[in-house]
Length: 455
Image 1: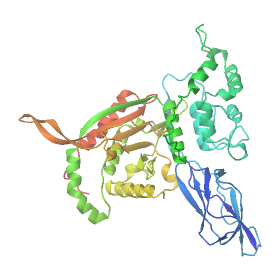
Image 2: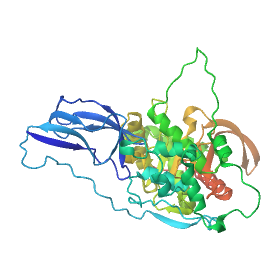
Image 3: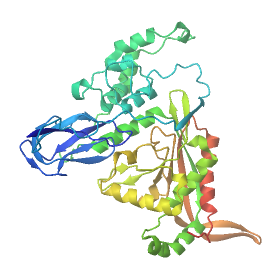
């Protein structure tokens, strides 16, 4: 008899850990090849872990709700194989070589006097404590040093600091680690001290204000519902985004009559030829990619005081799940796909999102997000930026409206297909001129659609 060590498999280049949701097999159970042993979850995607061998489950090394690092042994399986050498057959993940996909463009104007981000974005830090890439990213955005991270109590396995621990620490005004903050402030050069003599507000009062919570009155007839796991993650991500970025939203109204008439004309033949339905979403994505090429500074992210200009154009599209939550699968290198390729990618990702079949990597690496609020009958929205991106576009419902048209014979009123586009952007790095011009350019591409276009 031999003992097989089951490792948590690698789930994508950007995924370093997962949470055990549920064990489907218990110690003592017999297992066939490819039987599902457990369900795991990353930040966005739930996955199943199948058994690569047949045998008996001897031991579970992690409990439900515990966080596991990729490559860690999660279970022991007894097999019929003769133990001539270690039963380990899975290849342990090696550190991926990071290809330069982004360019550091410049310091953000007016912030040259600020300190650089104290946390490295690499795998190693000055601390012996492990921090996941997500924790490092949040710490970098909040300018939390490695020394300060080391002082935060972690609730993960072996005291590991989780994303929730860090977000709670930030949202509580770093109150629980006041001594660390005091040391950090005292260690700053004297030149950074305030010039004026006005006394600063008491830090305790500020912490109380930021930590204050509204008291909710609950009657006997009210129902209390606990957020599900994904709902909690989304809530934390949205709050973090609002705290990180200075949100501004610009609106334009577009006459998309030609686009609507063109789709009505080609959709039957397209479905017959490609066995795919063509929706408006790939058309919107095509217009967005063209506008990003015109205005590449929309396709950036922020790391401390540095603007990172992205080489690839990876478009995230918000998709509604049966649970009511939203997930954002990403079309990688969307600018390199034609309309047929975009249509197939959109349909495939949307279908697998609804069936919880997305791979973890398929929700990572987005550089710009599109959300179609019109699918819910809404005419416009003010979406929240999907960090670490700096802009998100919402497209509203297409409605027939009377509109004024300019003709060679004078102005006339006609029934046109109209829609609103709203772009929320990070005003730290995207000013009103860039944000407003960009969303106007997207509208121009939609309005000037060639009604005779071949596909």
